[in-house]
Image 1 (tube, rainbow, N blue to C red):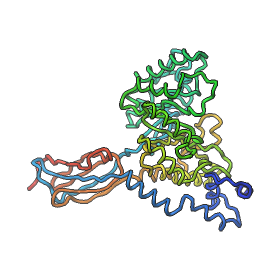
Image 2: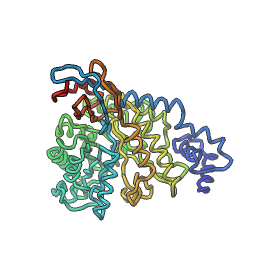
Image 3: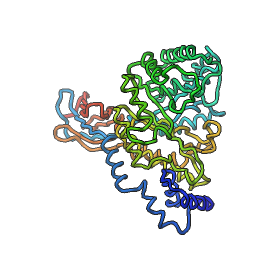
Image 4: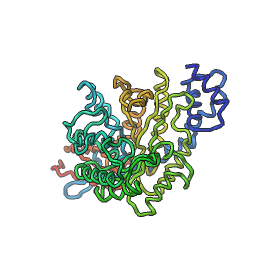
Length: 471
């Protein structure tokens, strides 16, 4: 590990760029993951980047403001009489906010034991899953689409029907990814623009007929700002894709745009390239319903292992505030944070970054979902496995990062409380948005209820005890 410290010292002496990788690499040393003797005092100030008191207070305050909602429970008898002194227990069961991973390894392991282990780990921290609709793998042979759950097996490409069935059973929200992308193009596509446009329109229509009512969120176009100029695509590709999706899909589908990390997070205020692209859609009156930001940090070098190179926490907040002006939900759609090095310290470093980022993202007013990309090490696409960017290790055991997110999602960000109703039958609390189980005990009656706490729903929850009460 000391050789990494020497590398970082050289990096610090040479670089003039104050990138996030720079700051977070210093953090790495400052928190003890990569010790560099003699530099502790100099580097201590950089540790404060993510532990800055003003930043932490803002994140905490915004989580309290934007992720929680007041709830007022009123317990009454069947004839409407308020019941004072009723014992109330409230426990949050689910999140309204979407925490997810891709579902590319569903039933994809060699043993049923591994499959069960993967699914159990997935469901413990996630209520959201990305389903693969990559054209070349969904339709490897023209006209033979792999929708059915008994379709030919392709690694990391479970058939959509299988994903839908599993998600329905486990109450997991799905996102289809993607409808249109210049990559993963079928080999059988012609080089004729008119014919490609017709075939892509057929693809949209076929997918919409089968899944629009069952999968509510869709990446309509993926990574359009890095597409090669020689790729044969429909004329006015981005606009065409969103118009076609609007025509084919349901009004309540969320039709999203998604872009790579280096562009979606390149913050140049109103001149940001991604912002201008989305503004173009808006000014043309073209429907789009959500904005996606990838967050892949591929390097495994210790001097730029930190997430991203062009922003710090405050700039991240500025970036999301800029895109929040569109009034649409924002999503962190694909996260890879590598595990650099071996052993406990390397895992703790990944967990440190993950926890800080999730807290920041969860605090953003317009943020609606966060998706870690590959749940387990060894299940990424080809060369990306060297990053070991999973939350589980190769044996599907939880890493420190998984444990850190589990604590946030299932402990810090879940509400449980109890008390008794007032003279007018009221019990009030403030909790994270989601579904709750409420148990009411009054005299000889114990009854369970379910309520939804949401910014979009009434804060008032009347609970009626219809059973015969002892007098």
